[in-house]
Length: 209
Image (tube, rainbow, N blue to C red; front, side, top):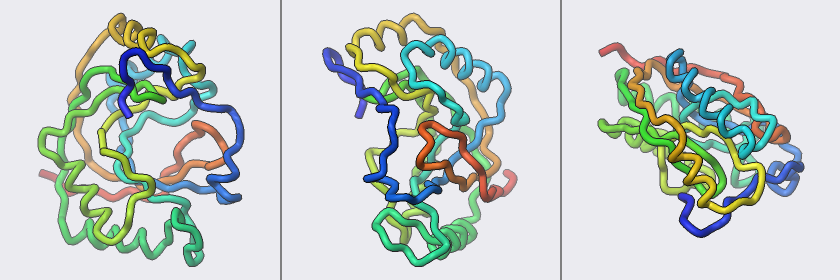
């Protein structure tokens, strides 16, 4: 998962993935939108500095993924990675039961997975873990990995030695930002468009402190 020394990064291949999407279009997830102007400027600058390493074009907004739902469908699910409206409504009901309040997060260091460059997110109150537990009450997350909250800067465009990535990370400015979370967002992206934009479908407001 995390990039290790003396290895190669995993580049993103610029082609369609029909064996994954099987003709389906809308891939759904819960995520946090980012609105802090200073943080947004910092992330944009980091992405620009590493544009020679990252897959292009990359029009996906900066965000923090909370829970990967699968292919959103208004019909009865057929495949294991389909996600129905009934499952979505059940998740909303579970959120209502827990009466979640607004909370704060902090960004951490720049880091790398084996396939992507990212900025760490610190969750001292473990609110993200709590929210993920609510979502998974009766819905299994698609291809779950060990959860690491982060903000993706981009996927790698070419195969290259990990040392090159580590050297670039060391040379980049490291800043930390604290920001408030007021709502959770449910949205989709087009499965046949690599790194295409997120489209929000629903906002779940959190209670004021």
